[in-house]
Length: 368
Image 1 (cartoon, rainbow, N blue to C red):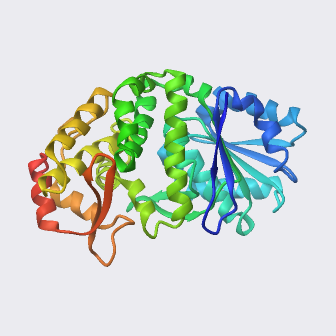
Image 2 (cartoon, rainbow, N blue to C red):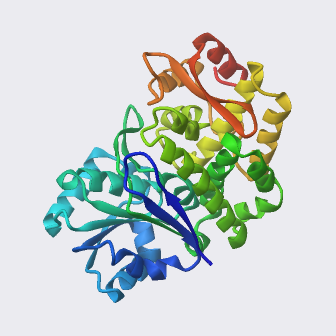
């Protein structure tokens, strides 16, 4: 059984997010109506081995001419150097504006392939086929594409909406447990932002999704996409409400940057989980939300096997973290901006965070 969630609103062309089991075998049939010419499947070396043959067969069986373009696995591929290499290979393939890109992989592949599609001949169509839970519930939906720089994560990019997103629940069975848990962090985040009932389900019956239960995973993916699509439809370019989707990310990105974006030390999802726990503790410390809510967020996050304290991931300097946070994309006019909470399911944007108060909080959290 599949579920289709439409993504509409704003000035972008509407598209569907389809979630269900066995969708990779339907890739060709679903891409064929969109493919006026050739297709290049951009993936990483790991996913190419696991799912590349099935994807190419599905496309070819549907009469879609396809080529595979692989990049190294890992966050390091979100770089100027790899973007240039991908664009050069697309040019060497002779792609034109009638051709289409398929991003087959996790968030790194989706971000890189999406940005390449946005730039190539001023923009060609692309389809997202996310193969990680994190990508299925977050990065594949909404049109954000980007690469990293030494100064921060996702600082160079473009908004480029896909034509279609296919979230095959079955491919999640190939994920290592740590990657599945990392994706679960983004699922929890959606409940924390605006759906307390969804968070309750995730904390109870739905918790089996974090361990790979397909039925729970499909429900978690669908509800997460419904939440994100509603926000994106209202605010595509992150001028207002969409910023709420970054709950936990300002803390998380700063921690990732301090660790050199080393996925072995800390995955993006783990950073988001820690960032969400910190955002709720900071909100409680400022008297913005009940301490009981912050305690519950911490407990549910830890029960999913995700980090909730700085001490679990390394040693950090408070001032260094503040500098990273000041360089975040949400910062305006030099002012620190955080996504905070009044309660579970009620997040808001604070654009005037006091640096001194935040420094004191970080030191209380264990930063030096």
